[in-house]
Length: 579
Image (cartoon, rainbow, N blue to C red; front, side):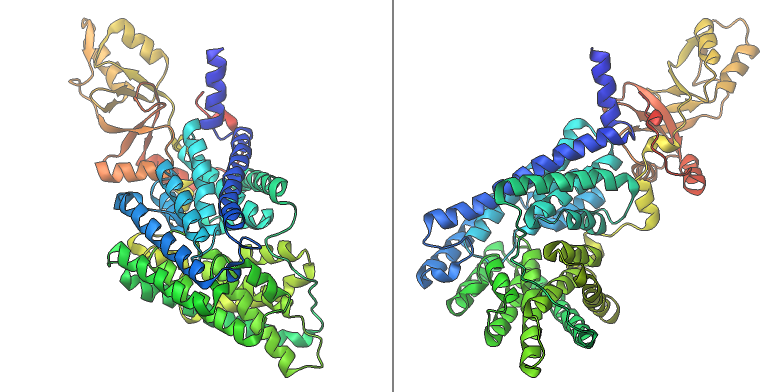
């Protein structure tokens, strides 16, 4: 029974078997969806149960003094909470996920996940002008990562499982499962691969199921019937894309400007943001909270031009400020708010300029949301798929593509700006997106390039034991304690040279020995190269467990180079697992 259990554990964690990973992905999707659902309930229930609000986002129905008290109380509570946490343990949000994926192979700590959950609830309930999707991405990735760590997943599979949590989080937040898949692969994993698609799709569907079971089948926005009346609207859509690109540029530059405050004390950074939000909320209470009620009103064309313009400017300022000073909540929601305001403004202006033309304000508001999301987050395909799922209208694909592409070109090619997440991470100082070679190595299990024909032996071998070892025809003899590799030919020569010797000392005989380090079977090829570089070694012994008891094989720098240049075609080959 124990042997069978170990076999299945190895099949799940230490193999390239897709069925085991799919099962973990499904579990991760369900649990991540449950965590996101509890997160949403923790935000919505207190607002409608304890406060005189008609809906969880109707902050404008509260008296002014209530709104200010909520903001100030929440700001003070957040500052006190983070002062109780070591600076090295304060990482939260999408940027934290990207860092852990790039530097730690998808290992996300439990403590940061809990901190993110509590901090985001406080920030949103108190009315700060932030979103819930960024924290949800951290919670989803963190939940899936903890499941993978518990299962002992190899590094290249743990990264995929963390991506599964991201997909589930986006799916549960917006009720858009396909957009969750694309976002996870486009922004977090930075690749599209057959190996990743199956588990990520399963996790995204699971997250949507959990969300729909609790909140129903409606999407995050009340999208009216959208109409694209004529090809004569194409020039105006191009103008919308250009305007969205310029607004996205202003937003990213705003984040850069507010990042200059990052060296100020925490109470000063977040306290000034809280005071600014409170001052603006006196005149524009709609800017408080996530703001999806205002987005729905904009989609319905119910917000007048002057109010839309003021809300766009206020949200742009506060969201850039929050992102720049690393406030512990999201910027995806504010990005969609700004996009809807911009699109709604463009739609109303068109109706004003051409009153005889049957314009759809909601149509342009949706295009603005997609264009801002694609340009600011550098996720054009995820934005396009989100538009399609939110509207359930394929007619939005062509105009959506135009608006998103033009906005992205303005940000990426004219102003040469990276995504807002890259800006938050300080450019290459804290995060560097992997190049294609690194990406390939990180996604390749060390077993793919490993030589498995190795025998672990003691330093001194008797003649009989040496004969048994040589009968196995190994490529190398491993001296674990001495951390040396010895070619079997040297043992044969020693036995032949001295037929009377009762034992052979593998350290003293003439041989071309190789120094060897140790690495876990969970590692990928990039891990192996990094360890070789830091230890100045050419060879590593690959061990099944962390106690370095059972050696599975050895890998050299030359093996990795050969794999990169002559790697086989991808295949789902569970037999590669050294079970």
